[in-house]
Image 1: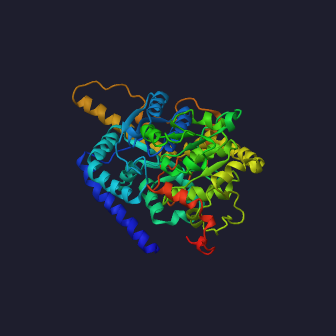
Image 2: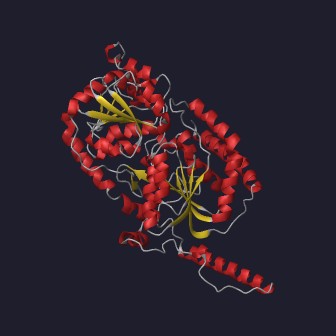
Image 3: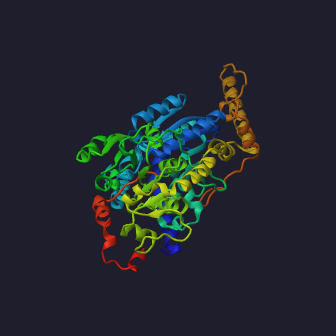
Length: 522
């Protein structure tokens, strides 16, 4: 698409957002405000669990550093599994959890279709913009946030940009790696549109990266402790995706292996029924015990979710990836993992060869470390790459071990006011106290003793770890604007309803008379 046309469409998107939200916010009482220094509004996407896991880890580090976040706003609380919501509220008891109840649904739990996404976006904007505007206006009025720490949540980020609010927007997301990687994916209309919605021209994007990258935080995952493999009856595989329709080849292509398939809690009954004819597949709800089973399994079968795949690679597990059709982020992740990791394999079917632009033989470009194989070939060939998997797993684990330190180093400078801003905030607070005292004196009331203002409180008032202080002294500050300084994700995946038929039919197309030149089609 021509660059001029892309810019025109992005400009129209901004105009549409401003026309939608500006009058609503004004009608709901939004007024320009003086930010309360040190107050952080946290917002989080709930399409998939990746963003929630990332938020929990980041906030734990920031809380230790003394950062105050009185409000955690979830895009749509009912999408969060009950165990996760309870854990978050227990972990952060002093925060107020707000359900924005405003999020575009990427899938219905069964399939992924772009037309359905566009329709859901239009319906959501048309039916829920009023209540969203009311909630956001009330939050800004009550808390006057100086910062919004967003985990790829587009609604509040868009409002901050279209209202030109004084709140500084910092986004933390796995998608940040795509914008930094210069692979070409970041230049497309959809990815630039996502950047405008979630970051915008005034925001700062801090990437979560699987491999070391300047200005980035390691991909946030929890690594399971080492555990012996359970090899009874040949062992088992773990499988995970938010839309298990993508993994339908498990029904027939791995009939001789046990598979533990994790699905969304709300779709458990549906997929239990769907797989009841396949006794080698056991369906389980997503839970914290996933990592325990992963450590004891033969390997992972999944879609290219950044969190779960990185988790498996770091502990040296072989990984087989099915990619949702038309999901740009997932397609990027698939190419990235196949390029950099010997443990990763994908199908050698026509669709994947076209996606990766390789010939009929399925040979990946020179320098790529992954492979294209059938599920049966992958299952039989783990021993050949055991050494490479272990070596890359150790290297990846070393990078991931720096997560907490780099969270502090990248984010604390962004969430700490510059000396001039802090002085201005203190002056404004003092002026406010003086004005209030004058009003009370004029009315005959007694002025209360002057004290520190909550608005001027430092976000680092509580004791901090030594590496936190070092981060504040010399931490690198991510560049603002542009395409930024992620998962999870992701981080919601899906597939067309006929994906299972496509995959199973394509498994045997290597034996058909398809020309090599056709295999190079995009």
